[in-house]
Image 1 (tube, helix red, strand yellow):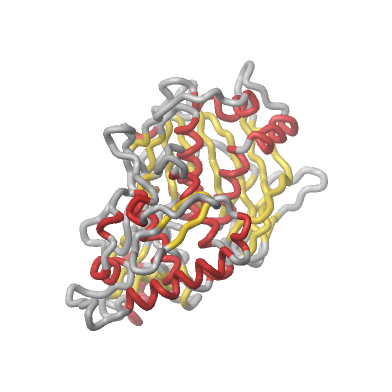
Image 2 (cartoon, rainbow, N blue to C red):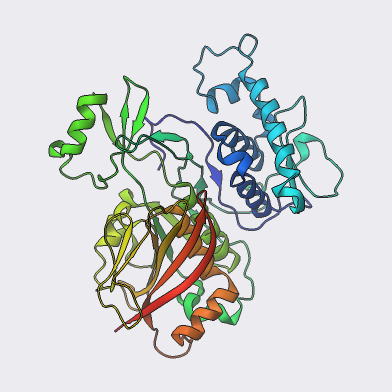
Length: 439
């Protein structure tokens, strides 16, 4: 879904199955270590360094470590224009020194027990990825990418978020995220733990067609101020010309270009990456598409997985199934049919720093023998937590026990409500609240 008019601030990386990027460090392990680093205190308040580190690691995985030169980094990471001259502008060298210091700080504290180490050797912009205790390899050989001749995998692109501006809420930082739209083909078939079958059997059956539809928030560009703007309430492109909120944006920041779909929530991107790795690891493929590009005709013949906030995913709002847990205001989930001990409204002051809620819904598909799985939350941390909850054997076993699910007989459909404790945008703990069966 790359758009010709969109500025290119970072790479589109492959969402690969758990192949190895070298003899010792798999791609998935490398990306997991990168996620741990970027979620740590030394990096959560250092967005430019986070962007720098993600860019060089993703380029390494993509097989383009040799391209990591000062000019490329200045233009791709630090928004320098074509006139950028590394000889007179030392920004890349300065930021590389700061990045090395931040990595040292991380591995001296939160990362002291991490099994994988990511480093940026002095004199080079090519990162080294190695297991703890392993000899330090040459920077250019730290992680050899999986080539297309070895693994015949079309890939889902992942990039994470730049800082963007919200008009009414001041500056809210997003990391850059763009997820492209090819199929990811399985590279191997593993024995699926039986606990996963009650939930995942239709999705991992041989020859299954699986589609993931992820939220794509609307943005507008302000060339005059060099800003990307997101009116929080606008999530569909219809009737934009008469929208009061957009008119106010036009008055203050106009003229505006758009709508554009250049970004995705960072945690939604992580969730899609983990979901893809899970399905590919179980021998089936996944096709991903942004919500603004998804239409029923293109996905109705397969199993469908909806990811993210319903307000950013119009098809999710038009599912032909009556559901008890509804998406109310941005902070609330409304329980239309509260049972004893349940609340009518589940609300939070912040999805990023306090608590978030997610709904896992197993629904009948649009064709016989097809299923719809909804992994939805108002915020990215809830989406990531929902994916983790339904792809781990121990939590799926608990789901089976609570809902009395089995892979035998007729499929059961339900909505399940989860509570996620969140700290600095990262999900910390997920707990089951309740569930309602769908007749």
